[in-house]
Length: 474
Image 1 (cartoon, rainbow, N blue to C red):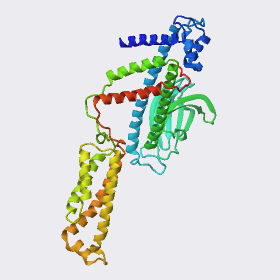
Image 2 (image 1 turned 90 degrees about the horizontal axis):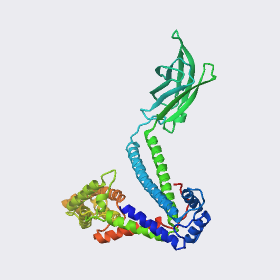
Image 3 (image 1 turned 90 degrees about the vertical axis):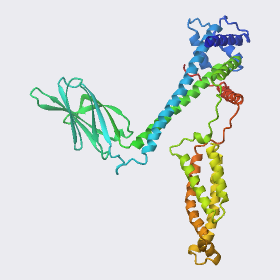
């Protein structure tokens, strides 16, 4: 019911748009008058290619006369088609991105573990050949022998003149320089095989690792080309990581094409709307109502950044363990030196970590603070380490480093903490890559709804902009 009401309301608004330029809804218009109306509404020339397509759909009676009502009907149809195509492109882009992500994850899992020989070929590389059918074969039984180096397979007899094999055979590949030979024999009445022809296939045209279908002519025993042909499909995957990277490139191209189509459709819809500002206002008000009904923010807490971190490695767990180790070491080091900076850093980090208040910029600040702490510890360690092995150590150095037990323990633990602080710095940097730039604060429901509506309005403004382009054939 709402859709029907909206359609009637849309048609009424479009009629009023034409009444503004003193054109009645039942008045007959030629194509020249039709363009003058649109140009007058737009205050510049309307896109003629789009106008021609609309006019051809309206002029079904071929009398070169149309009414405003006919235009409105076709206009609403074109709008619906373009909106459906826009939604279809968006769904297509999401699907392509999922497929690309799946292939990318496969690539990441094998790129460093795949083992290849000196020719760059993986250990379990196979050539897959699917023998499909023969063309112009004699009306006799035909058998096939396939040979590759010391590998040989035979396919049972089939009747001509168009034998259908549909058999799949695999051959082990080691160097990529191998050639596949196919020998076709006809079987005479006394069961004496007679060579009908041969085909030799190299692997050079299979280096893109995709399935390729060929139609090859046979050569007789004298090397002359015959009229007999064979259809086959072959594929050689010699490097999984390279194959997957090629698939990623294919998905990238598919995504780019879909994104380009989406931009074209959105521009075409904007061009369609250009002469009718009141209609655009109506569309915006209808969409706002749909937003308020279907997209009202729920009464739930905003999910904070640290919980949204999603990475191939569990950086959150490793970071938590590292900060706890550094804090524990700092407590024991306090018996020998002041370690308040480390304790303060660890304390505040743990509080913000547990309450999920971390984001990218704060993680960077913590990395800098840990680096400063590491520098301070390094200066202290250099000063008092001379008491262990330095010949130039003073009596004071020896006293603090050797004779005073807590200082000696603190120095040893300090060296251990160096390692964990370096690890902690690396983990904070890695974790910051998965964090947003700033923290999204929780807002009251009313404010959040206004925020969503403003964002939606901004997107719609971009869609209904004044950019003009050629209408995509809908």
